[in-house]
Image (cartoon, rainbow, N blue to C red):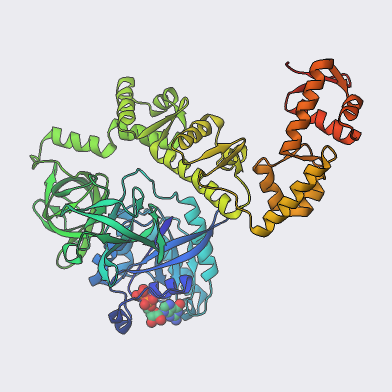
Length: 626
Ligand code: GDP
């Protein structure tokens, strides 16, 4: 699942463009309608075909007016891709730059630029100038080199190209990692009659399920998930990287507000002091000073804060450094989270960075070498984090390969390995290690594959084990242990060479059952000279025939000859008994024994060779083992 977020100067055509792409008008408030301006977050979604599959992609339409940049920050946090909008008639504006700086500070994974309102521009030269200026503006940011697509929402020009560019970029973007630690920064709270409390946000870190108990921080409230929706569809499970509405039991809307975080219990808790790395924007209007009052934004939250500048007297525009931030009210933050600092008045973005430690416990002395060293280590990542990152790039890998690839001192790497094992962040399959995230993805893919197969082939018992393995593109060394755990947890069942969900059973309609009974009756009467595969298919239909084979009711020997299970057992038994008495037999002996034609005798013998009951010696057969 993916989420796209819009950004760009007010009135440059973001909402109109989202509507042109999705058919959904994201301006949901009447007030917006009146002022023709998006003042709160609007939500829409597109159906994009990626990797041959239709994917619903959420769009968060965030407003661009100066007063509302802070609203934009609430929406842009969890997005995978920015749809950066610049109007061709006006070109790059101050807000264009500020939004770009924010996308850059938040390290949004990438984006596509839509040059809108091209219908208002007559001269080609002007368009070219705007594009050149835009390319300069994007250089050195997360959007450097992003495709720039001229469009007009009014005439529809370029909309297909834009859609294609979005698909291409999304294909290159991995889905949000699933570390089994779901967090949903809440960006809207409301109540619906008949449902009660609903919160929305972009889910990261893991799945949420109906029935889950969750926590809402920083207040520390407990609630239960009564219902989930993604793009107005009811879901049992919400996946990371999707826009989600959560219907909660056990809390009132009055207890919640934007900026709270809904998560699995124990993942984050409120803090009022944090350690961070920080980059002061080159375009910042003032240097960053110690004890400066700022507005702090992270996730969908906003709070007043004071800076404690560490290891420097102040930071000039463009400089990087280390901060402690003292928050006026507690926020639920996790390590690694990105944040933005703004000047309260006049409102302007100052810079941003990453939370290194959400619970440092105390105020640091400002100019201590050991304080700075600790922050540097945290910024680089702990050895276990580095090892896990490495593994996620090369997985699956053996312990030896991973430790070699990590290039750490062997003792450090060994300890980090142990830590990852004991905390369950890596999974061992046979000789190889995988990140828990990857392992969970593979499990889910296998289950999804079987579920889809059952949905599409209700008359088939299951999928061939080998086909499942090759569809997942897995080596047996990973596939076998993966399957073994799913079988052990009774999430998958194995019947012969077929894999299926344990709850799945073939059910025939009364009419199908009638045709089946008639066919099986023909087999019973025919004995050795059974109806052919072709006749059987014609009698019950191809899918029912395949179902009977899956169920073991029919046993095909080759493309032509097939038996009912009862006759099959009997014939194989008679041939084996004969061979036990006579040591060897030719096709003619078996033909006479069964009082049938050569065709059936040879089909049976070749089949017995195939399943290693007999072996061929010249043109005779003998039992492989007695
Ligand atoms: P936002 O504030 O960036 O979301 O901008 P809107 O989508 O609300 O658009 C602002 C104004 O520009 C509206 O009056 C739109 O009708 C107009 N507009 C949007 N896209 C186009 C376009 O492609 N061509 C023209 N001529 N006008 C457009």
